[in-house]
Amino acid sequence: MTSSVTGQILSYRFHIQRPV
Image (cartoon, rainbow, N blue to C red; front, side):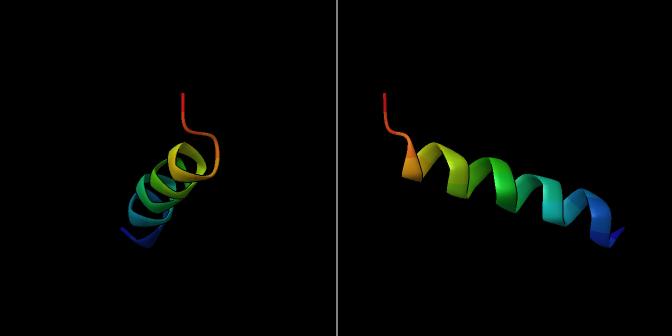
């Protein structure tokens, strides 16, 4: 359960750090 949430947060933060 936590793994799924962590993956979602990582993808979210990664997108913000690297805006297209």
